[in-house]
Amino acid sequence: MRLVSSFRFRPASLQVRAAVWRRTIAALVALAGLAGVAVAADEPAASATDTRAVVARLEANKAALLRASSAVVGIETIAVEDARSIATLGRERQGSGILIGDDGLVLTIGYLILEADHVDLLAASGRRVPARVVAYDLASGFGLVQALAPLGIAPAPLGVSAKVAGDDPLLVASGGDDRDLSLARMVSRRPFSGYWEYHIDDALFTAPARTDHSGAGLFTAEGELVGVGSLLVGNAAGTGSPSIRGNMFVPIDLLKPILGELRARGSARNSTRAWLGVNCVEIGGAVHVVRLSPDSPSEAAGLQRGDVIVAVDGVPVTDLTNFYQALWRGDGADRDVVLEIKRGDDTLKTTVHAIDRMRTLSRPKGV
Image 1 (cartoon, helix red, strand yellow):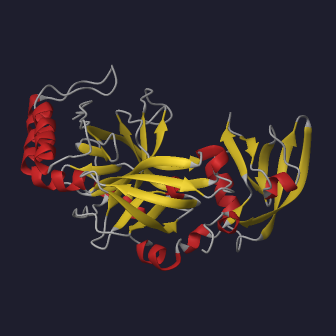
Image 2 (image 1 turned 90 degrees about the vertical axis):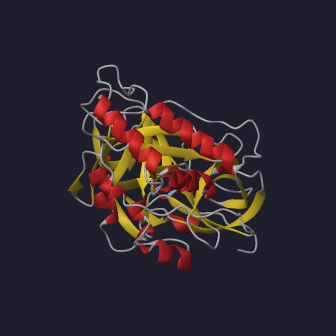
Image 3 (image 1 turned 180 degrees about the vertical axis):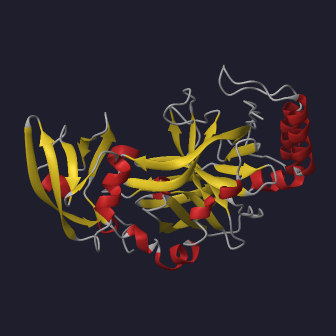
């Protein structure tokens, strides 16, 4: 079954009442009752039987979906003045987060709160509530903030992302001034390696694409949170499949084992790992350097844009995944890493002293 929907709801003002959200959920149910819409031109629409099954699931869980969508809040942040991340993310950032705790704990995507000095939460009622950063987790990509006043909404229950199937109807919800709801489906589940020294297993890729993906909640038809929005991608289905624009969501299963640790120390222990400050992409079975972070270990060691990384500590690398595996397998973050690189017709070896990236991040004064 390949049902998706491009239906979206954007309230004209932030004064959203529960009745409006109930009508929105009802509209999603009604739309699902129409003929299924294929994600790609060569995909068949959902059968009548499949569509009826989707409608039945959504209808049976309207109350849970209302709670889930209401748990999504807008997030507005301002980074500290000297934050390195301003160069790539800007100083003022907007996105979404999901209330997951009765105590006001909100889950979001980490880059929204990276080096943040000021955080505001925007509830569906229009209330603006100040918040503080609780955790930024480099390894998973998650961020946590704590509301400093009651939000007046119920938290979303956590689901099991490993149980999401390709034929399950999913709900994507964002918050803020342009809060939005739409139906989607998972088009692939696979490891994801980012050019910024980031890797996770079992990332969820959905379609159709949402441009307001940052920190958006991915919910099951039962209203359970299974992912947090991270990226807009050009091919959600993966290499060798028809090109489908979509989004990458960080699976909620990555949060559960580390939630207590994030609350206690601000990051998970596996976020303390070697960092070079190098951005790379895979081209033709090789790892190419495309950017060096200013004042980073890679820049200090003399790496250059256009270099091809051939091996790490003697371990051959051909893609981002095995590059990161080789980089992170050593003991500790502060260590010497020997890179074998190709530069033009030359093959060189250079030693880079890796560091713990968490120690390079700027923090608000007094923190």
